[in-house]
Length: 320
Image (tube, rainbow, N blue to C red; front, side, top):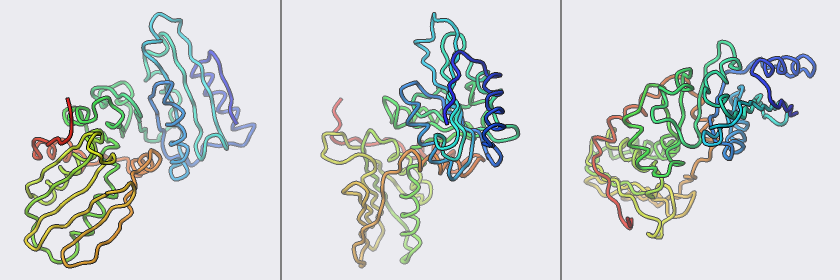
């Protein structure tokens, strides 16, 4: 069910939610958090769809704040809202706020009256994010703040900016997309022989910011010299992470994704294996981040210390 509320207020939205629950039997009991999605109008629906899918694992209230600062200048203040419940909202209830003019200038005041009482707040910026998410109006009211460096014009520059703006509770999908890679590498190194790793080489596409934190994580965990190589679009390789090579005295371990979704594992003296390593979609990344509401200390260490220890990143086949 979708209820439109043109030219409304947050008070009227709250009253309508109560009315819907009383008349339709739709309740918010069991909601474990409030997810605030701060997005431009053209990116709202994709983010809401991902949140609806993730809500089947994490029942929640979703508040999508859709605003365009450029269109908000010089226009009358107005707030249009849309409430979605039932089949149109997955296991959540969705409130879409479209603010213009003066109403769009203070995001915090837009959502404060709509947050679930005594429930954690998570803010997600699917597109452009504030320079310091933890000090933004929405970031200050949230326990977790999620960004996505891959959606920025320069993903590698966005990744470096995350290192300087980090506050406990921050997260970025560039790190979340590494979960399967980290699990597979940990499983490989948990098997004999247990000889030390003497060198690491991680390769990936320059437009994918996940390659660099993967190399930084391996560098921190293994304390071995690590090289991160980024390739351009004209190199003939597919996007995302391409592979990881781990050098040790007995030979080199290779985990290489030569085709999308499938990686090949080569180890000295062992048969070659194919491993499923698909690129994670928005729904999977969001659901993963919502599993924990405390700060991700490992991400904080990688983004603030690991990138610095990694040093310069090499570029191949990249033209200025």
